[in-house]
Structure formats: structure tokens, C-alpha cells
Length: 116
Ligand SMILES: [Zn+2]
Image (cartoon, rainbow, N blue to C red; front, side):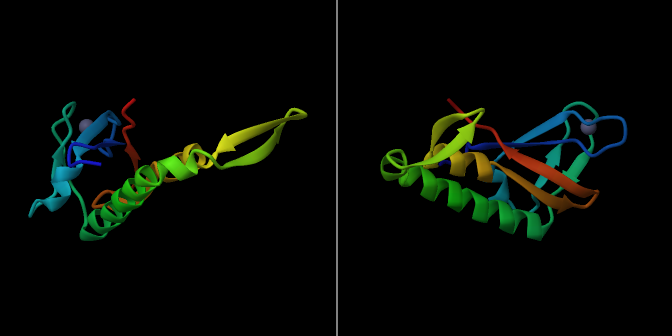
């Protein structure tokens, strides 16, 4: 994963809620601030949020690296009487692609924007 990995969250400003995107390179900046393109609100990520996003980034990078072995293993799940095998890789990336964190305005859910 590179610093260009995109993360988005919905703008916490009242009446806005538009998606705000930033890339992981932001986490290395002294003042991790993001501007909402719709309403112009400035959102400052707390040190806690930056730390947790860094951990999530490392976890996802590790999962991507382990993809060749994870892709061969799966979990069997019963769906409507049929057994479906879900590859571990898919399961793990789905589980970790969202993170609820606090920014100055309250809890916000960050989503990793998945590239094809
Ligand atoms: Zn906004």
C-alpha cells in the first residue's frame, strides 16, 4: 500500500454529510487537516485517530502481502441451504476496511477506498 491509498468519511458538518477524501500521506503531516470540498469545513484528525489509521494501514498492508496464502484458504458459510466458501482474504479485507474513530466533532466512520 502506498501513501496514495485513499480514505474517506462523511463530513460531520450539520446539513452536509458529503464524502471527504484524503490519502494516507496526510497522516505524516504535522497538522493532519482535511477540507470538505462541499462546505469548506476543516476537519482535524486527532492524534489518536492518526495512530489508529496507521495501525489499520499496516494491517491491510500485511493482509495484501499474505494474499497468496490467504487466497487458498477459506471459510465455509451456509447461505440459504447452500454452502459457500468465502476466501479468507476477502473476509479479512471486508472486516478491516472500516474504522470508527473520533475526530474533533465526534465519532466518524473512516472507509478505505478500495481500488480494483
Ligand atoms: Zn462538508
